[in-house]
Image (tube, rainbow, N blue to C red):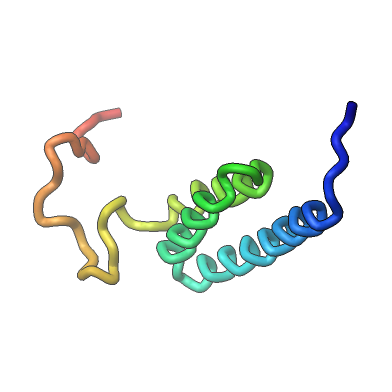
Length: 100
């Protein structure tokens, strides 16, 4: 037997979808304005909120997050915290040590 959603639940799901579209557009604009790092952080928070229960919306934010990640600096280095490379790399950081 098919389940029937309560009207309030259907309205909430619709609102989540609409708000996700608005937030996605805002994050893309933020990244295009040179703030890809901040857009990634916010997309990551949206992923965390939507992961359980809103799979379609989660996938959209996860996709955006991975696309925008190419436009940011190395992981763990924040321009807000002084920018640049960390003084010491962790022992398991092999960036630049592998040859093609």
